[in-house]
Image 1 (cartoon, helix red, strand yellow):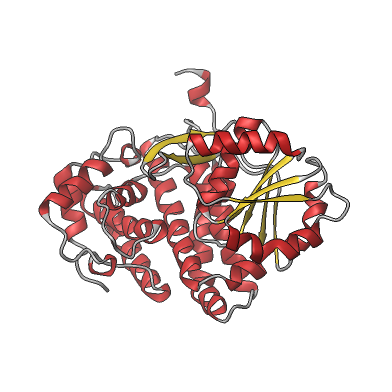
Image 2 (tube, rainbow, N blue to C red):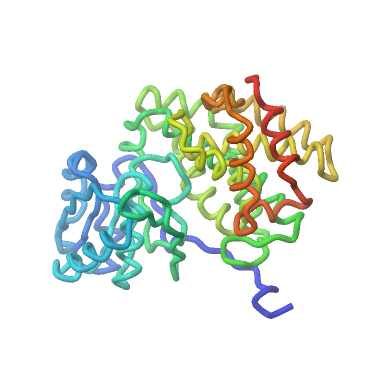
Length: 370
């Protein structure tokens, strides 16, 4: 075993800031990074945050708003790097959801500039990670871009997040839901996290905290999101979705839940499953596998019942029918299994071997909702 293989590496953003109106205090946190913010988002997103950002950056070198509607692909990123270097700005920021945050991460990485994430939704745990997903110009998956560092600043304005559709918060809870169950499986399997090392105690504590917070605050936070008000429970769930899950998944490791979600995405179906919703279903598939193949079937059975009850309480899918996949074909199940069991994926972090037959049987076991 090499020295690197014995390491336990945990990655996190240098600063995490959250609160209602936080964008209006942006300059307080970016001043240490440099002057001038090159802020990438779509046109509608820019208009939503423009006033708050301009108020938050007095005397901090200003901001250049960069509307971007293209794909997160190398060609577009190269052009944005050129524009950034010609702009006189020193800091790259992304605002909005996953695509624009990933574009900004890639631009900052290639330009070797400070990286600021301004999520205006809490639908995934991506803002804190040292990873961007690149696509072809046609929107087909290309590759993962692994970054040398996590973002320098993640700032989540919960007034804007509360104003977003409540379903996006629920989807983020689906992504966060997987964090504990996948990190636990990875640790029990002697698997590797996103940094290629064993998950450490801090990552496992954060991962378990995700599940505890979801149980305690998830349903109430969703009510507050529907009412467009950032109450204490919503604040807790935003931090859970973005920070605890972001650091927890990257440092704790992924397993079957995300492998299944990748398999669902590969089907190309026009269904309701966003990433977090597919991951929530993947957690349930993982627990069926643990119940059937694992060393602690009673624990898995109890966890599955609790997870399915939670998903029902916040509107996350509990069945193929909920994903508009009640009519899934045998060929589609085989394709889902092929992608989920890719040796380059995350299924190898399970503490037991999983065959295509095992996986298809676990998926079919969840045909009907709770």
